[in-house]
Length: 239
Ligand SMILES: C[S@@+](CC[C@H](N)C(=O)[O-])C[C@H]1O[C@@H](n2cnc3c(N)ncnc32)[C@H](O)[C@@H]1O
Image (cartoon, rainbow, N blue to C red; front, side, top):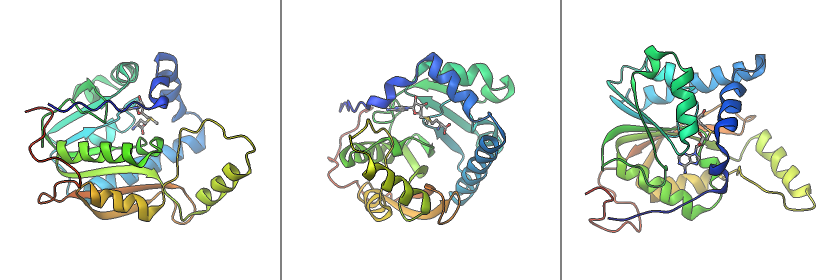
């Protein structure tokens, strides 16, 4: 059995108070609601491009803001997990019972998912990997996704090559003292080579607002022949 112990500083902030704030954030005001609606529509498109998977793991599910959409995809099995039990509690408390009852929920780290190999068709990962600044940690996460999914991954992150990223990089460069940073822009060619090294092919890239927005959703197809580079043969955490 192999154990991963990747811990991110930002993961610790999702206590009960922060989880409440996160739930409210995406419903507060006209522009937030528009942005949330665009997130949901891009995510739905990504799942269609992934072939409408029959089983989906929403990780991290946060406050469950994608759950209503996920129940409309036709998937027969829906799982939702998060590192924070407080987030899971908020999601199950505030989503309507007819929605939340469709989900098998559990607490887990995305770096060491408590599921057997190849146990879901798709991993649906919104707004996590842009918090992972180190390439070796991103690789741990992507390899874990490769182990657990059978077919595909839909993943959102911050990429370069747009106005928002350009402005943010200028702002970061102008700061005199290095501030605590918990969100990172990744160059598109770097993240795409990391996907390939982890055993995935990019099948689509969907931009929130082309050329303007920093957010992009990738649809990745698992290459069943490929073992991720550097992965040891025969190691499985859940054999
Ligand atoms: C920005 S929220 C995104 C939640 C949801 N996907 C969404 O878009 O609304 C980040 C989430 O990642 C979770 N998280 C942080 N570290 C994690 C880890 N190592 N494994 C799994 N989830 C983690 C947090 O608890 C939080 O719910």
